[in-house]
Length: 278
Image (cartoon, rainbow, N blue to C red):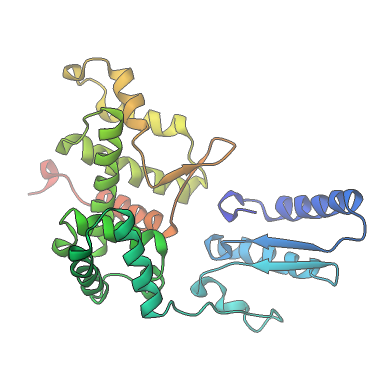
């Protein structure tokens, strides 16, 4: 079960109970395991109800496994759950992963240790939390930025996430033969990610038509773009850091990206325009 879809705690608990009943009919006598990940991403009141409801389902024939970042689950540690804390990745294991990514990206043996040192130097700086330093997706992006020569100039997490976005954008456009790398288009795409984060925060969902509507309002009236409709559709395909669920809704590939772009949206919404600044 994906927590990002939960906005009604009773409906999801009823769905789980129906699914258990259906599975027991299909596979009588079998034991069940329920995985519910991202508990920390739920609204506080919904989270308490969901955790209590899932706990009531936990029995000899039904095992319930909850996934959460520590900050969202620490309040339940004394609630009778058996808690398993994932240990930090040992330094050498992390180094092996980074070397494998550098090798995958065709970095020569002569350059590999130098690039590894650059990445480890970046990780030693107070930019990322320990959790993110152990996140394979983030480590992979760091290797890409290191190879492109961008990594050592990054001063904070905001710059890191924006450089990651630009990196993916440019590479995807090369494959598609597109050219939206000018400052105006990159800014629009970053603003759109911020809008998506805000929509997820306020409405718990974002769909492609919402993204297209936002882009349309951003570029409407720019006759020099030519075919505006084609431009909007092409730009909508560039909204990375999101993945599409089966029912057409979008979510961020990493919660930390969503949190940053939400903060970016709020910061921009509360920054007066130049015209109103005296």
